[in-house]
Length: 177
Length: 429
Image 1 (tube, chains in turn orange, red):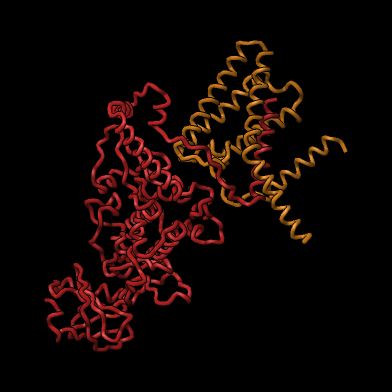
Image 2: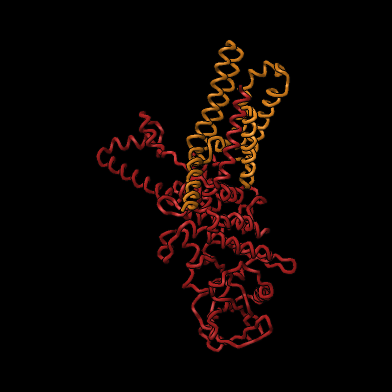
């Protein structure tokens, strides 16, 4: 079995599990918007990464990619509350933190401003610095994604894993007693 | 005319809906209102009679008679009460006519046991409720809110509205938590075959569109009053339109003026010119309930949450098996996944007491420095950032909410998250 096949099976199993165990409550409009954005980015990555011929993706668009990601998120963060939706930053950080609405509003605005600046910064670096420098900057963007990953890992996933283990331990205790 | 002074006039005839008629003796209990007086009935301990004042105009009495006759024929179907709860009267609804001679004089209604009940008003102040032997917690409050919304929903489904819905007109059974609405003969009826308006209103619970006007949409008025009562019950008696003016804003002193201008400061989107009352715990309400409040107090009356919507939203919290209410580490009942409102309230009050103590100590030890501190706080001109921070905010550590979703749901959401992050990473690469 090749590693690619194994990875595909694992991904398919994860998606199937996510579908079967999904919460049945209606999704908030902000969460749906974020899902659509991810689907679009995923579709784009799949198309140009797997199906389109190499080099078909416009070179200039490559330079815009981090800006597109940052500004898309910034637009959602800015626009959603003014349309009456909840603060999108709650979904990004996880609603496991107990902040007041006022605090969430400031965190939301803070994130939106930061993302706007990062998007503009990417353009500045992409069109004024060398390609190597821009590559370096792009890696920093990926580090930001990893930072969100780590944030959820430490505050949410560890808690989830602990609960899963507690549940399994409880079941095992009942089984062996 | 006072019927207590005329023993002969205390014998009346009761006319029951099945056509039965019987002579009974009324006994004065000294309870008199604007429209009539309430009497107990000899040998009928479960009923009382309301006799309209003899000074009532003939035309008005005829109007009362038509309304009472319609009400006797059209009793609304009320929420089911479990069999173990005996003697609970949810509505003081007319069950028979009282005739003096051949003329209509009043009506008979089921008696509400005042020893088992207390005014809903008492629940707005914890001390008053404790004085009545009732320990308030958020679980009980939610149940009372749910029972009240259910009752209003039943009335609305029969095209009957209370209109003058306010805490003082509602009684709560202390052990069973069911509610009972008084003064049913003052209800607004807008059914297809019969219309009878209710002229009585209370400005603090009157929807903005009916200030200085007649109540033309009684159900909409009830929706507003119901939301205001639920808000006050859950927020330690704080009225939804009680706030603090900011930036020298011309803030009406009367609640009715604030209602008219739609100055509801507790919404998810705060008002620019009105701050919330510091002791408010509205931040600890579940999002669904806050949305219903926001809609109920929004300028557009069409979006106001109906009694049925309240029933649906509150039933989740009133039902223990859903797990929507949990206990905080201190043992208070709270909304799962939210800050504990009791701890929040205690923290606010404790913080206020400590700040006052600190200030008094400072004032005693160094009055001049204390005055400088006050002036700088008022002007926002502290030179030391540490002092500025102390003057402005109470620093709280970040708290984590317990995971309220099932473990399967959480795993599903987090898988989606991981996929999303991987896609973003791949897309950037």
